[in-house]
Image (cartoon, one colour):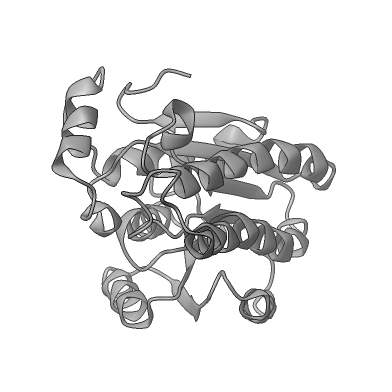
Length: 251
């Protein structure tokens, strides 16, 4: 495992905490240089410092997925240090976007979720393509959600945004194959991280009791799938969606 991504340079958005932090740790443990991007400044620097203390090679960049200029500036800086081998589109607006029915949602919140989760994922991928195309087998892994597969209620903007990410993954795979870039998505189930602390207890209970593998899903349960899709083991896998939820949803 320590050499699975040896010599690779992997960009991860939303890397300061939660799933993104776990992805960064796993990628670095697999031998890659990790480029951690997030809007949460102190958490980003703290997480990067922890990885560096463990011997990891880490770059950090503050990024705002709602700002096209921020995305362009960050990837210009990343490109100054050469090509990248992989991108994990993990950053998304999740906290505080649930609880309202479709009749109660306001336009401002809807637009904000789409701006970050959908447009931001597209613009980050667009900015990364020239850097990924410089390598023989570039990889993009989009982090979707299994909420888009079962239609979680009182979460419509988030569900719609993650459904869009799944659809974009397939379209991107068709377009980017000519550059040797594989594009896949994973759909995690409800995972115990900072961003899901607001989720009602009954929703957690629904997942934990409804999984074929009953129990709590931790970030470490998701990292193996990301490592696989970033690695040479997945050089002929593209346009696919992999639910990682302990069997709450079968695909």
